[in-house]
Structure formats: C-alpha cells, structure tokens
Length: 89
Image (tube, rainbow, N blue to C red; front, side, top):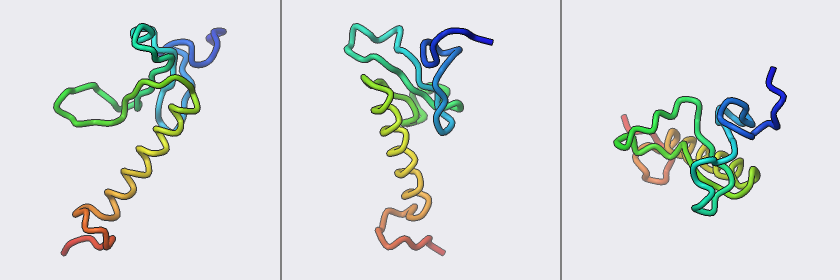
C-alpha cells in the first residue's frame, strides 16, 4: 500500500482510461506540472504515438486523453479519411 498522494509519481499515478497521470518531475522547468502516458506507451520516436503529454492540470490531462480517444474512434470508423464513414472493400 502506498500512502503518497495519488498522482505524486509514476509508481502512484492517477489512473484514467488506461493512462497514468502523475507529477512531471523532469519537466517543471518547462512550465508543466503533470505528465500523462498510456500504459502501453513505449516512447519509441518512430511510433508517431500521441499517447504521452505534458499539461498544467489533471483536468487538462483528462481532456487530452479524451480527445485522443475520440481521434482513435474517428480513425477506426473512417480509416481513409474520406469523411463518409465507409470502410473500403
């Protein structure tokens, strides 16, 4: 059992929709208070992966996570980006 405040570190994050939200120890000089990343995020630079971010509040982190989920749903329903929602044959 961890008695630290939730979100205070990587090992004791706030969990939200498969993401970890925690205090950004490495980035406070850049003006960000919190960092978030998906449980499956590996940080590979060639992954073109948007499942990691830096924000100032927990609410901002949750909003960005929600937005990323909406973008993934849009891509799944319209993979060609045609706007018609039809999956090609």
